Length: 456
Image (cartoon, rainbow, N blue to C red):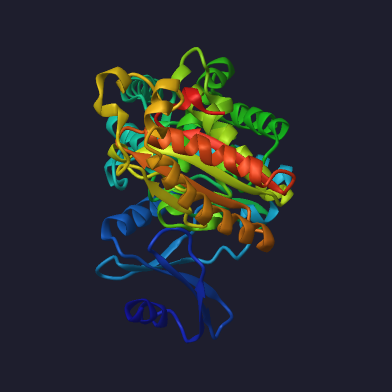
């Protein structure tokens, strides 16, 4: 902070320094107020390469009269810089103003196409272009930070085949230009009645469709389909691109962007347990579903449809005040079940101490619903006694949850393969709760993670 203050004092007497709430980056921003009434924005970065990318791109765009903040001063080590203060009103603050949104859409191709002429893309950070490898990074981010934590059982070969297809479509799309990468309403300021771009250091060479998808499908904006169509028309007219080709390729970029977004929401919400990010998942998931062509991406369409149903079910429970008890079975070999809410889950019962029918060839291909397996499990009363203890624990919690107005409880049973003991236990727990709490404000869902065809 000291170097930033020293930089500011070189330009006049500083009478006030105000921190500015940042976004998801590690950069810190401050507004400096000077004795002569002027103001400047100071940035203190943590990554020299990122700072240098912003500074060089800002100067490049300014030279071409594109609306970005002027760079006023830079420290010797490039870790701090001062820039023009564009005020405090972002496009997000006037997101219902269609005319201003339209101006932003018409501004975008000036950066993408005009701004790309003569640009040295090597100055971009962290990569100079959107290539196949960087596309796969983002798709795997979606897989490992969203699909896996959501407890989705993945057919890896089918998923990878469709990832490869989507990656090929993304990198082969045309035209190419300067892809802003993070073009969204909070990164556009309204200054003198016009939109100005303030965040572009992550830009690179890439297809122009990406920024349109990023902007019009941002969950915070909540644009209607009609507004999206109108804004796409304004963009196409301003960019002078082929309407037919652009509209044909755009859904792939919406899908790609939504997977990136869901990866981020999964990491922030499912891993870091931040509820605010969890609330953004349903809308983004719906946008992903709508953008996928089932003929081209049948497996992704199937996955997202299942996820949307389970998410809608949880949301409905929260809206009507009912307690949803999510009963499930799983295999310990494939990891503990994820909790998609912000309350940390609930009970996880280990069925592996119970005599395992899966050790015998005649039961191996069967499940906990087959009569032969049920007879095996119930023969010595071991699983019956086990479940009686589980019932007592869960019943007590359900009663208190209902009294206190809680909306979600997870009850999971795990065994070696998730096929016999845990499936039997989950089935009986779900039936027990439905019978015991019949007529109460309770909803019971049943999920068999390793045997989804048996869910009800």
